[in-house]
Length: 112
Length: 111
Image (cartoon, rainbow over all chains, first blue to last red):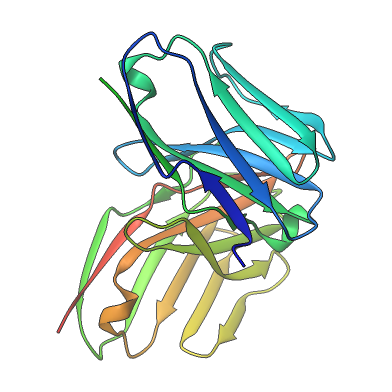
């Protein structure tokens, strides 16, 4: 069983479209995260939710909206996609953050 | 500042030791981590060290921490081709225990 699963794995879409990426974890963790990895492999946190409550919201355009229907799910909706949104988006979860994160395998988003 | 710096690239021969270095900036960091990312995959936690430790060994992996210089290193003994990947150091700090990742070091193992 996959611990942190993201769908879709690949997403190619045109500028201006709205898309969603889904994430689910079956580890029973309380906290989930979205990270963006750019073409230079630099990882930057976007959002963090603890038990469905938003706790970290970095400087991210408001076109990005996370939604956590329950503590096992954290979805990412992106409106009006731009070329610069092309990246790999990783979902992760943790029980206690000091124990480290369990990452999903990523969603490669390409905006054309 | 939040920059965690690593050298971009390291190439070693199979069987040699690899040393990957990291410089972090937040002296209040409580835990420091090493993650491995293989092509097309997410990051995998390799090991972590608590800030009151100087060294931690786990099989082929040795982590050294120099708090005075804010320097963290990962030594991989007897490096294998399967160790080829990008390695990220990371620190945890701040009220919300945010993890900040380094810039990543691509390790190439030559057979």
